[in-house]
Figure 1 (cartoon, helix red, strand yellow):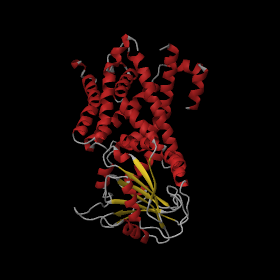
Figure 2: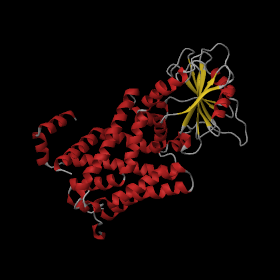
Figure 3: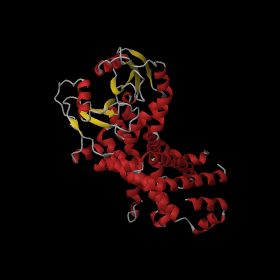
Figure 4: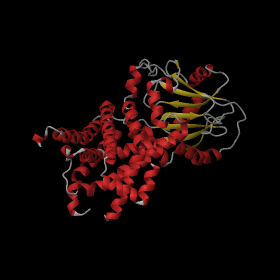
Length: 380
Length: 63
């Protein structure tokens, strides 16, 4: 590597890290707690009722929809969603009859075995909801979520550039050396280098999947506007009569993909369905295949599957980003490991910042005298 | 990287491989796959802990 390109990488590492560091600390602190969201919800008595007796039969979907609709008879069902981890938990979205999006209605949560209706609390009313909102969008909605996504991408660039500058720096140093007796800056540099390089792959994966999840509205929206829209456009017939029962629709969708489980059902007229076709989305049930979605369009008047397809690679990438960001795919030991990695990442963030604060005066002065450094400095 | 650099990368590369194996393992299955994940992902954390413990100020005698 030439000295000039090394200097370039150092600048990239310094500025990508500095810009995302404040947000990264918020993400580390909230994420550290959110890793245990199931346990916290349980402690706070905020978990959903998913009790049923072994061998008990599920209620027909139509009964669940009827129960949900009693909550507000002016609304109509638009979407059903099924929890992959907890088969007793069913989400039903009720919307205005003319609504094709998901803005004007409400979600109802039902126990699929008992029909017990559970009120979803506003995110601000629960500890986990509050932390999640802070983590995902800093309480600023879609714009905030995109901001956090960009910070995530900067963090990814910061891990890669950090790796590049690690090699030349460590050329004459033993791996893992911590020179605590040599002043604040050297001690922090060594801790930053050891913790950073040891956890780099984890940080890269969690940062990248976090950024992908931040952009999920764009990714899902792209799929809906391209492949899914092309699929529904091939079946433009309007509704002329009554729809077949929802349970028949679900059975038809499942029959198109033997061995799969229900993931979502979108009603006709909804942006994820056709004008007279239901979309039935299914998934597998292993840790891996439950993230792979397939979709069947089911004719609402005949109950016949009109078309069935997989979902494109970017939807699979989005779905697989979930477990690799949340660390929820390997039991409690993995959650604890996730939390420890999060703490180490927090230490890397803070020590990196201290290294920058304590940069030698000579270099700080030369930064100020160089035009590009001064420009970047005034912006940060 | 030149030959002189290979020493710099030996341990970080090993930790990276262990991390990648660990991250992938638990998604592939349960039981033995979970154990593989827990054990391999613990190594980078253990390396951080041991290095910190051994070189903590005041413990330098054990270096």
